[in-house]
Amino acid sequence: MSFFEGHNFFGESTAHLARLINNINTGIWEYNTTTKKAKWSDGFYAILGYQPGEIECSYHNFFENILYFHDKQIFLKATHYAGTGPAPLAQIRLLTKNNGYQWFESSALKHDDDDGQFIHGVLNNINKYKLAEFRAAEADFMAAETGRIARLGGWEIDISSMALNMSREIYNIYELYGDIKLSVDEAISFFEPAYRPVLTKAIDDAIKYCKPYDLEVLFKTAKNNVIWVRAKGIPIINDYGSCVKVRGIFQDIDIIKRSGLSMQSSINLLDDQNKRLQNFAYIVSHNLRSHAGNLKFMVNLFEETKTENDKEEIFSHIKTISDSLSATMGHLDEIVKIQSEISKERKSVAFETIFNNVIATLRANIEASDTQISADFSEVPEISYIPAYLESIFQNLLTNAIKYKHPNREPVINCYTHIHEKHVYLVFEDNGMGIDMKRFGDQLFGMYRTFHQNKDAKGIGLFITRNQVEALGGSIAVESTVDVGTKFTVRLV
Amino acid sequence: MSVERKMVTACIIDDDDIFIYGFKKFMEIRGVSAEILNFSNGKEAIDYLKNPFYANNLPDIIFVDINMPVMDGWEFTQNFEEIKSHMGKKISVYFISSSVDINDISRAKNNPAIEDYILKPISESYVADIINSHDISPGFISMN
Image (cartoon, rainbow over all chains, first blue to last red):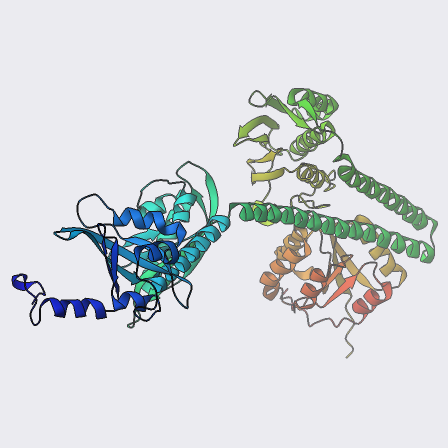
């Protein structure tokens, strides 16, 4: 039943109404704009902390002493509202007796009467809510700022509807601006293709098996910037243990990740160099040890032997060992030179020129073995490289191809340059005896590794070639089939 | 009835000609009465051992180097293990290498098919002892 039923209050009618208005815990006021007289309810005094009548009830007192000066405009605007419909609510600060300024909500209504023009108003204390609002706004601001600075946003998938909700910062990372809402699939479509199935599976597993995930993946923004992001999700379960939501974070970690990756590649490079040095030290010591051992062996034998003939033979062996020792020292010099020459300046060199120089020095070998060499450097005619290295690469790989020719046919060597994804490759193909990659593949570039019973084999050429190529940041790969031939692919840069 | 001691046959597999020469000479000087076969890599030795033509002249002791072209000491051991049971006599295998690589040494020590790992330069008297003290297993009795 409404108070207003039949346009009549029940009971004592007006007196009842007046008591009602007076006693409720809300400030109610009336102002006669003609007589300038104001009336305040008991509740009006109460909400300001006063006893009824304790302060002067006047518009002047209210406007000048109680209403915070900053809020005067707002109060007037709301009170003298000229539009139609309910008057707007104004939030204003009023000075209370004991608690300083507090926030109130004010609403007012104009009303014309035979006795003049009235304005009625209601005031409610909203201080608690207002402060909570400020705190919430501060917290929001802090969260948004933290997200903006950390390039980190939050998201949530509601499993029943599969609706995705993402924070503002995530849209910023997506470089999507304006009022856009993405579905889960659309959100995943921004990840680089290789990572899409990974994300899909991670989310599926979170939903199905309540499995959390934490991934670092590549992502392409709406403006086609490819960046590294961290996508972490955790399942939220209900009382029955099934996943109802997946909640997570999404962060732009591009700078950290890229510096991490470049650090890792430096570590790998150092690691490789370290391994090579260790291998080198081991090999050199092994080689020197075996010469030294043989030398000692022969010297002992020389001392124990009686016959002149034997002594002569032993001495010839000692000479051989001495030569081998000198050769080993020469190899050592060459390897040390690789490291010292690396600081030499790279020059633009034409493959053709280097090739012709090397062919000229190998002329005798080529003619003796009836080798046919074809070369095509049209795809990449020149390169910025250390000329001595390039010459040595040609020298070693061509010499190898001739040295390990097939016993039943004349050697045919094909060498050419080629470019792929900004890398320059130098390729040598031969029809030689080939090498059993399964057995020797991993030792092919080792020092003093020889695989054929060949008197010229020293096991030093490929070792040096690989070191030169790697010292300049390249790599060397080999494919081979026994009795068919071998293909060396050198990635120069 | 006295049994005449048969001459021991030793086999050396090494790609280093100087080492083989020295090895043979030393055995001669030390008066080790052994017949010495030599091969320059594992494959040559395996081919010999497999050849029925040489079935009556198999070695009693094999000294094998590790680093050799074509077939190295490890591959030789592997291949030898496969044909060992057809040899008709016990053959002892020793590794002789200048490798001080801890991996090589422990790999050899942990392989029951390898009697010992002898580091180059070898002690001639140790090798002479191995040959001299070798008990010749009762040989395959020839039917002809």
